[in-house]
Length: 205
Image (cartoon, rainbow, N blue to C red):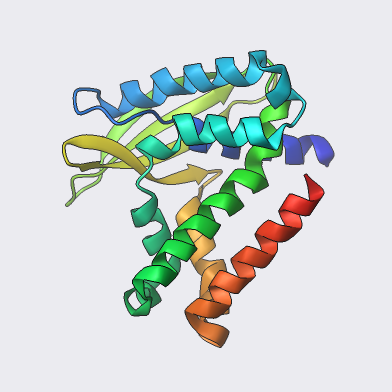
């Protein structure tokens, strides 16, 4: 059970770290492959990351992930229709808490990286939009883990806006969870819930 959980967490980390500083001249599949390799190398060779140093992990995520993730789009999609009713301050708080949640929940998986490599298998256009889905596999000693990345162009550069692990789109999954909180307490309740989760995760690290 623990081994399966570690594998799942590792795949989710890889889903988020397969990103890079946005470049207009880089194809989406090349972006995923290039930065996946860079992050894997950093995670495997940095002793602090292997030891679970949350500060070093956050530094890695901030350097390699955030520049190539449109976090505004991800957070807005996860919150859903109530995003329109949120104040600018609430939107900033939501983005900050959502980012912290994702980094801390999956940071421990970086210590599980051993012999994995990432292979991009296919890139598919999303009909009726400018988006594409880059399909890839994380390959190691066990069964390959399939990961899909949804990307779109913003100011001429590709950015990640969602990730599919095991048939589940991450943003959609959080939208379902957030929806229950929003229905009962609104935006402030969601911000408070995320803050509580982040505080609890921080206490464990």
